[in-house]
Image (cartoon, rainbow, N blue to C red):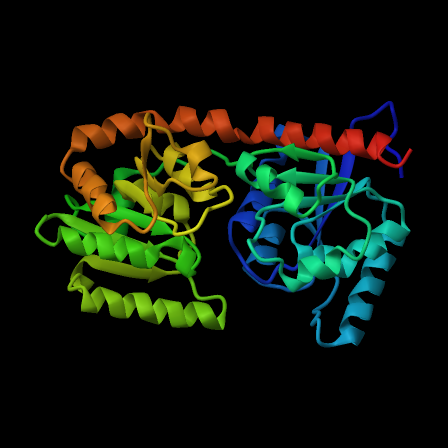
Length: 383
């Protein structure tokens, strides 16, 4: 379909696995919840797996189509989900189809092509090694457009698609709701954290490159400093994440800081955790392609400590936080010591956060950027 020249309304179908929950899913949910900011952009979803992501989509009023569970080792399941997507594209009209992983593009790209609908690959990361889904996906024609979530990702795009049109669009991230002081006090009480403690927060997937271990090693150098507590937030979603979770909890015991670390698992309200904390710290060992949680922390007026890698270099500047060298426990500990001991500095850096976050990720503006890119593609991409 080619969109009418007389209307800007655009129907976009996001084809996604749906079995995990992370930054990609949070970004898509933001678009659904903030749809009134760009009503011409109508997002629908076709998912393979049910879970937290699908539940939150439905609760937010999104249209979700079910393709069915699929396993690459079961060819009949691939044929089934492709048939289900084909039936959906016959029943309903979409102007653009977006996939968010090489896995989705490999499985569903040929189906989209058969309907001559523009295919967009939203690139959230470029791995150093070429994974098998990407090698599989590259057997088919490349997408008409690649949306990159940062300049860092865009700089690495030629490794995958040296000649494909691309556009950098920072993730839409919405300002948080306000919380009362009583709400925040109750949260601290729930996590056995004194009201006057300086809370250092990290919210991330339980994966080694997110830097939880490096974070604990730096905190172990601050045993002499009273009054701080660290909240580690992240849920186990895969077997290897369970093993890593056990390793970092054992490290807290080995390093002698178990009584000052709270491993909180999965939490339903990340924004409230941000509001109840004092510092956001995520010391990645490898580049973060973008980093929505950094932006969320800025909105909540929290100083951010990140490593000098990837997307955070585009998010955090000296007005709102610190960038440190990766895997340098001494430098990280020195930075955290400075922030823990200086309330005025925390307040000063935190005050600059909301404007920085809005400048980068205002949801209405970013969704309009997406609408413009998709509309141009739908009108001109298949002419």
